Amino acid sequence: MKKTYFIWLAIHFIVWTSAYFELPSKLSEIQIASICVFYIILFVVPIFASKPKLQAVLFCIQVLSTISIFYPVDNVFNSYVVLIQALVIAEAVFYLSRFPSVMVISTQLGSAVLLLLEADLSTSIFIWYGLTYMLIVIALLYYQAIHRREVDGRRKNDALLDEYRRMKRQLITEEEQARQDERNMIGHEIHDSVGHKLTALIMQFEAFRLSAVDIDEKKITMLKELAEESLAETRTAVKSLKQREVGGLQGIIRLIRKLEIESFMKINFTVKHGAFAASLTGEQSFAIYRAVQEALTNIMKHGATREAQVIFESPGGSIFRFEVINRSSTNPFFQEGYGLRAMRDRIEKVGGSLEINQDERQFVISGTIRLIERSGAND
Image 1 (tube, rainbow, N blue to C red):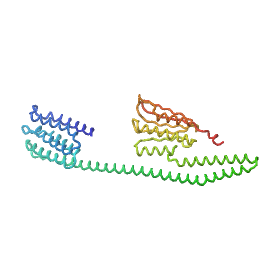
Image 2 (cartoon, rainbow, N blue to C red; image 1 turned 45 degrees about the vertical axis):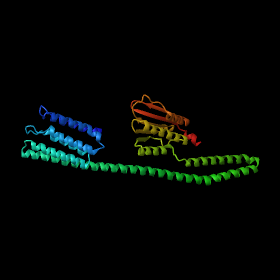
Image 3 (cartoon, rainbow, N blue to C red; image 1 turned 30 degrees about the vertical axis):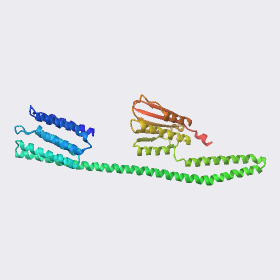
Image 4 (spheres, rainbow, N blue to C red; image 1 turned 30 degrees about the horizontal axis):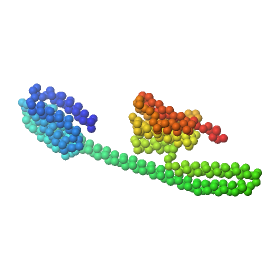
């Protein structure tokens, strides 16, 4: 609204500057008062944007004031009145609906006919001005029809887009719920079948150990401990299956998709060679997920732009490195808050380090985690 208003103001300034040289050298008091009224209305019209009827009345007063300003003196017609009246009805067509703008156009056409009749014009010039007025009016009404159709189409598109986003969020929620239900079902099956059988096996080992001789007791004890470890690992797996929030690289991809859909963030996600094949533990993977989540949330809340770049890489397969970059200017009052400190502590607990850097162009959070040796993992 502000931008279009200043455009209208600039056009009026250009046209009135040219029309001023065609006015009489000595203006009457009525002409000066009419010019003042015209410009007062020009500046106050945007204030009544929520009252179209009042705006229509003000536009009509503007049109009528042009009669006093450009009334033919010595039957000389000032052709710039055509441009000024065209500007007034163009504003009316732009800001008002069909009926109020037609009221302004009718007032303008009546004042134009009065000015043309009072001027000493030949028939051909009179017809030429009349056709000019009619073509301007037709063009403006056609523009209004197209503009209203475009506004209605944009409104419908926005409604469809909102509905699409709502359905997309609902679909994501249903997918997550279905996935969680499936994970819960698998967890229950593991718990009811494998867990119960391992428990029964441990009880049988204990009963057999009590009746076994000393030679076999060590082997039975070792087998019992192995079964107990298997039962503990099974319970840990079942517990992780029942967790609703999924971390790691898969969780980060889902997080990025969610932020782009719901928060209108633009995220450039780059995975360099070796990142997906990196041998991250569950704790390391979840720590990376939390760090990226916190960084993107901070960008969404405090960043100068809603654009971010996320980079994953594993150079040489010995370390895993991630970066979250937000292009923004330097903030001299920046301090690490609770979220960033918690992020640093979480990364350090899994054997990594976190760096936070900012310069005149960007704000960067980068983390490095040392990976477990593959050979050691296989031994």
